[in-house]
Image (cartoon, rainbow, N blue to C red; front, side, top):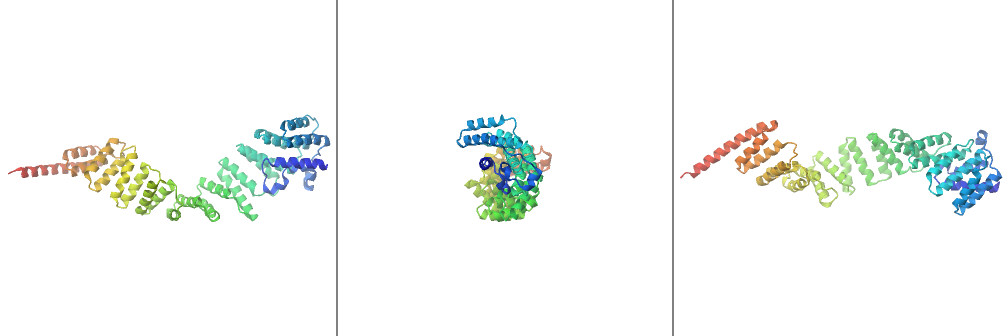
Length: 438
């Protein structure tokens, strides 16, 4: 019997290598293979039949083949066991458990799963064997993306397990995560964290990541913030600090979000394009355009911020709000070159207009109108007409104002400009005529 127990312990260890069971059951890996040592309480409720010598002999032969790396030999010996027509449930379970080990050696996971399923089909299994096999099968289902099966098997495991540790609850949360059942995932992951702390051990970092993700998907931002604050204390990583800032923004607390971003920026943690752009936008909302412009300028010139029409336009807007139109022009030129429509050319024309650069204004406005796809073409013609008027190109200015007048929203303004153009043209003609007289 000592030799039998030795073989079963070896087989138990081999099966345990397939997947780790919960830490609280580490001493029971393959416990079903130690049926002679079942607890008194278990034997009162489950009477597991013993393994007979002739079954052991064949399993021992299979074990010897496996130890020598001869898998074909091990399969042949196991086939001999399967051909026995009087196997009891315990012997059958041991045989299929050994099959699982052989298939795992060959990374044939579907067959590993099938073998474990056959183990669990046997009646009156030792409790240790059932709990270990159920947990391993749950993990195999999970890694094979059979999430509903994994959840059902884990529930079976919980029904028979005594004093589950934190890991199984974390696994349950991960399965719910894969099923996108985030609300149901919160309770088990919080339980896993609580149990870990009761053991005076530090919960795993990825458990907190899962919890914050679940709350985020449910748009429960107060709890997202609560979890992230804990994570920042336990693992002061820049990514968590930035996520915390973003969570305050999702909650609508943009003042705190900006304050955290400023701390992160000073620490050199803001390196991503989206993060820097977000900070610049927050600065604009807080009426701090100069700092926003400097962040955008540095990011675009040094590379962290992607060179797009939209980002160069945000830089230009920042300089314009800071009343630095001259510094906005280069950014608008870059943005206009990258833009597919003519809207940024019109913004550039307006900047030139503010700087009294009439020729550049006309050129930019005409290019914007030529590229088209403008939200307000009438306003583009008003800008063009105004700059042409300042150049005393009255005829061209009047045509521009006539185009603007086609839109009811600009008709009154355009009509006023046309009257003014006509009067100024007449005045200039009269002045020229007067100056031309001897």
